[in-house]
Figure 1 (cartoon, rainbow, N blue to C red):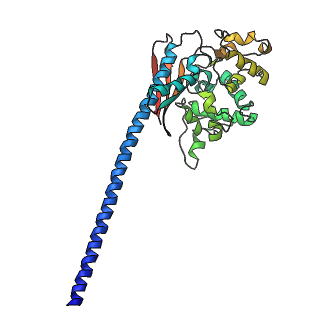
Figure 2: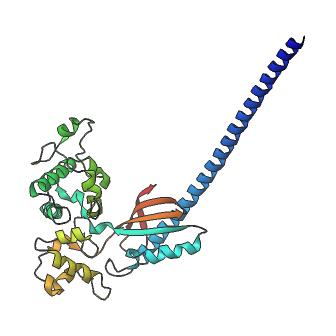
Figure 3: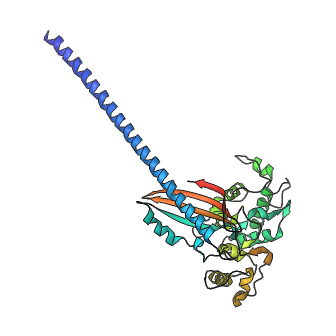
Length: 324
């Protein structure tokens, strides 16, 4: 009897331990699920808040562009100098702020203008080659020409290979094949699909610039000399050297100087001998990229948008919008 009773007690103890184990496991899982839901809800809430902070920065950028009434667009204007605005944004958000940057797309090389019909646009081709072979990118002349040919073949409508370029047969033969475009580029990241365009060349490395900072899918074929990135500014003329580049860049960053005429560079004695073709440059812009980053602790939310400002500077049209 005593043995049978001991066996029953042992079985009961095992059952109790199993039930306790199950209850503990369920409790832990329930607690884990609850915490996950709470954290998930908090993350969603923080994400929404960051999105609205970033949107606030974007609308500030729009307001700066609309408030600009000067007869030219340059690097001395408020829209091009947003550091203080970003610092003051901390006053309007609890534990939050935004960073704001506005870039003039008109200062970049318009990649689609490289092609006229199915042929090269010689002005943009020469400009691109000077950029690629200059001291900022340092490509050999042959590689620069092949890269230009490949970009042209990607854009032009025919299937004839230009020099060292590539058409559909090349892209179809890749390990992961895809079709050639044979049409204008829609976003600048599309250049990464073009033969010869590496990620290092596109994004840059260290202090070296990338094509993404110097080229755009927007524009009419002319470059805003007042806002062009330094590599593009240097590429505007064959005679431009480091000294002339420094003089031009310093001159256009001095708010006391008048940049309302595209030929202002001729007023600088040291740069007076530089031959920049008048049909290649301008002083006004319509297309701008606004980058607004919402900040909260270590969390960030980014909005990158491209906008077009109307000539009367009363309205802005949204051309692209990306949230990260």
